Image (cartoon, rainbow, N blue to C red; front, side, top):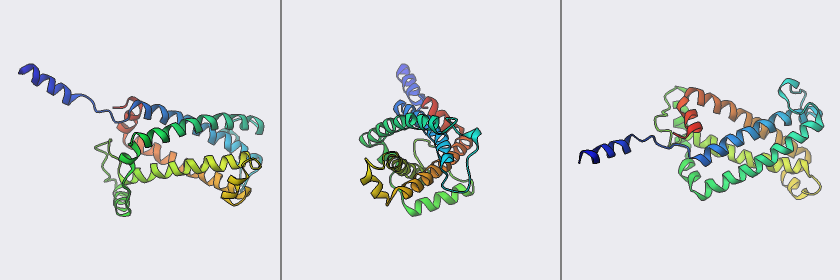
Length: 208
């Protein structure tokens, strides 16, 4: 009986897996691919800017337009393949439905107020609050848009039907730019939340 009790205690004391291995691998792969694409994309932008500013050469990748395009396309395939695998696995496993749904206006408003007053609970990392659900669901949509708009810019003749979905080529460029800006904003918020709740970063590194 005593050995059974010890076993039960050991089981209950076993660390809970918050982020499975496939999530961690795909998360960090996406992070690397996205940073490479952003930095090389800034160098590409500098060659033909949409607005009256350019990004500092110190935060761009590729050195010049040709080098930036090589980095951008290499990272694009990594992002597309890994991102597609993440979407399929997340949908097929039911993880997205469990983690991201439901999202209600009342729930989002409540958690936004709690976050602004530093009262948002992070006790159970296995459950996403409404702010997290909204951000993660939103960034998935933005990720799809930035890939589609990027393909439109890359092959505007071959994929003319895709360009048409955005209206025209210049509009596709603007969509691509603003999606990039949204992803940068998400990364800033994401990193800040990880710093404020270090155990969430630990879970994404070792799973527990």
